[in-house]
Image 1: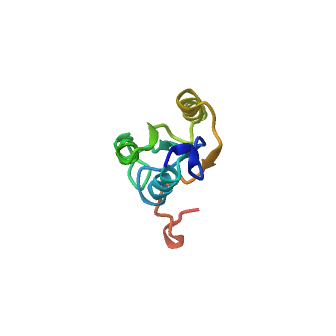
Image 2 (image 1 turned 135 degrees about the horizontal axis):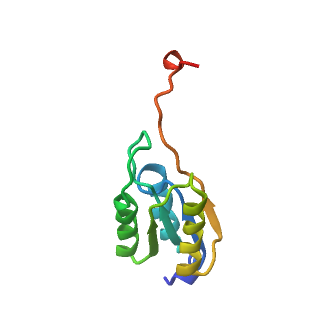
Image 3 (image 1 turned 90 degrees about the horizontal axis):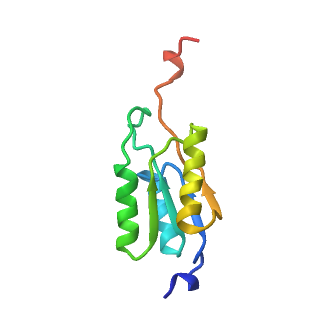
Length: 117
């Protein structure tokens, strides 16, 4: 079945926090249904430290190995410049953005009894 005959054929989806977990699953599903996918992930630890485009690129590799179209983007959604670059990546590779899945997040240990303020 060609991409155009699939539910999301020809559409472009940007998924943030897509290098693992729920974002990874969303990216793979969107690609399965024919979408072009921008896989965004800073690649840091669960606490938000560090950067590594590797997790995003691994998802891209899975998508392309299955016949889909995807590109990795390693910028932070907390940066206006990186967010702009992410959308530019989508437009320059696929022509437009049709869907954005805002999934990015980090886990910080802010249990109530550990809070100082």
